[in-house]
Image (cartoon, rainbow, N blue to C red; front, side, top):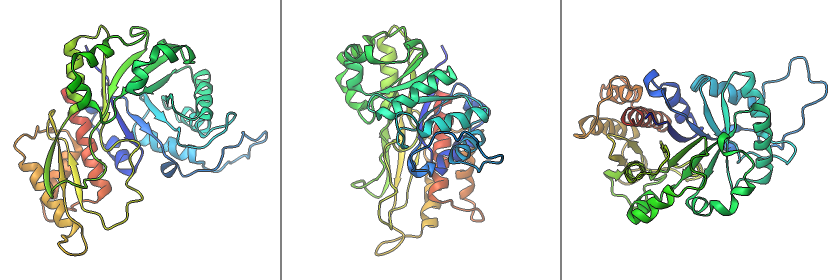
Length: 351
């Protein structure tokens, strides 16, 4: 059985570049879940209703600009989009504008929502369901999973039109440790056969490496281990796989004062993440950023457990860094290399 892969991403420059450079094979049965923040959207004003007499040549809006980015990076294939961070009212929300611009651009946008999303966003989700007839994605927590029988009656989209994403966040290792009782909670999923699709997702890539020793650290891919264990347990329904291809969608490094250590993350195989923790570029014990990035590229290339991927753009960029004549990259480009590699590798490892 073919499983869909759902990488959950923020919509920053690195993630956009990573998606844009996926190979044709790396896009097959991949449905990105994109979380749009106000910082990435650039319009924090409350949206207004469409004017009765729009100008003949309206200006490019934030929604149009986002639709163009999405088209360039991903194209017309299905993706999920969570815009709950953007402002709105029960009558008008930025999601309405984004949906209209996405449709005009020929995009296959399926809106995503959490149960805890603001009421104004839930209202916008219902308008998009009615306008586009593509249903929605519902991203729930472990608590939502176990209490579904109490809130299911208030869910407004038919399960047959709902892609259910059970997001365990950074608790995958804890769920694994619980073993059979936790697995049985998934097996007892309420209305299990009725949902359009069911995905388990999570991630444990840290936003910051405070407390980590300088140098390489291996972190287990606990969310992939959980997915494998759930399938081995037997659920009675098809379970797709999702993860955070970089740091979590709700994490942010924007307000951290600099200078910060130079770090990099890489997925060498299907068992571990490789986290490379560096030092600052200024002050005592500092090392130039370029020197650190070239060292990381060399360590990745020499890593014994690395699974090579000939068609992976991110790997090609990292391999090229060892040539002194090539750029060692920047924080944004290293995110693009690692996310591109992670998606390509994960898609190649799933059935």
